[in-house]
Image 1 (spheres, rainbow, N blue to C red):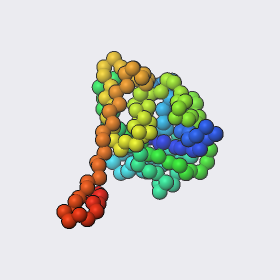
Image 2 (cartoon, rainbow, N blue to C red):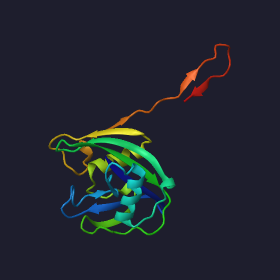
Image 3 (cartoon, rainbow, N blue to C red):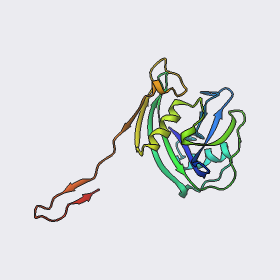
Length: 180
């Protein structure tokens, strides 16, 4: 299971998201990605992992109460491995984002959603696209031979529709209400 940080700030041209460029001997080296990571064993929960990974990778200190569930993505890489990615939105933090792990990241910057950098990890791009669409859950299953980097022609994102509000008619002409 992976946790992904969608750190958002207001920029001159609208909302900006923090991305880092992967480097070294890591999956998708040279591609842009959200700050992210794995849980450290069975005793760490997802919000703790998000807070820890954010500090380790970016230097930003996030209060766990400021993490918001954004979207869950079930992903399969071109090599066939699958995993679950939990994407969290964060709009408040302390500190200034900077590269804190130069052995796995060689750049970090803020980008508007309309001008995301290339190349970008397809899985990360799928999570951001699902988030922007307001999805709560999505599937991104790549096929053997697909590139690791996002390619619009091979976009494998499938947004899973959410639950709709149910309308109940009281049967006596009274107003309907939503039930959740």
